[in-house]
Image 1 (spheres, rainbow, N blue to C red):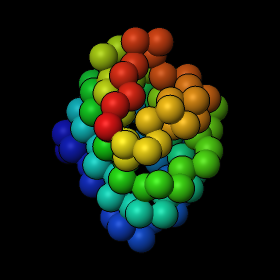
Image 2: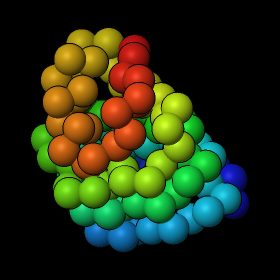
Image 3: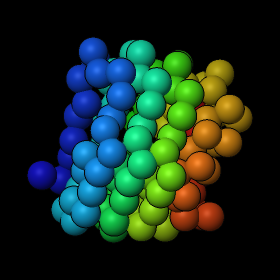
Amino acid sequence: AKTASIGKNVTSIGKTAFYSCKALTSVMIKAKYLKKIDKQAFANCGKLKKVTIKSMYLKSVGKNAFTGVHKKVVFKVPKKKVTAYKKILKKGNPPKTMVVKK
């Protein structure tokens, strides 16, 4: 599948959940109370360019969660969380060229 949609009731995305999903280009995280994206959750998803996070409660992103995603990856996050999530998402080791926007 090229796109993944994560349901409203999910509170965490487990480690290596989408590891090496080569075809994945976009992820829509609808979960309102997502608190954690575990290590290597989206690692080696080379075509992953768009990640939408609806949660206002994301507290942790595991090591290498976003290692090896597309270098032009864009994280779309709630407006009030852009600055905070930029710091949290960096812990997942995404490309330095990532963009975090509302």
